[in-house]
Length: 72
Image (cartoon, rainbow, N blue to C red; front, side, top):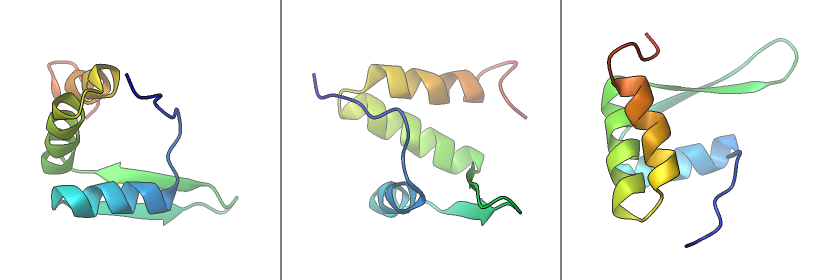
């Protein structure tokens, strides 16, 4: 299995989102920290893409957020 990074840069999130055909919103707070915001469509695309490419642990993170009791 391919090694999986624990953190993605904003540029990597944008690149992955573009490959999946979904949008992400990148914001920066007053301390210079970036935050990536995904809507339900983007989370579903990331979950399905990760699963299809052999990254079950990444897919599971998105599945948890999408499931009952997930982040709202």
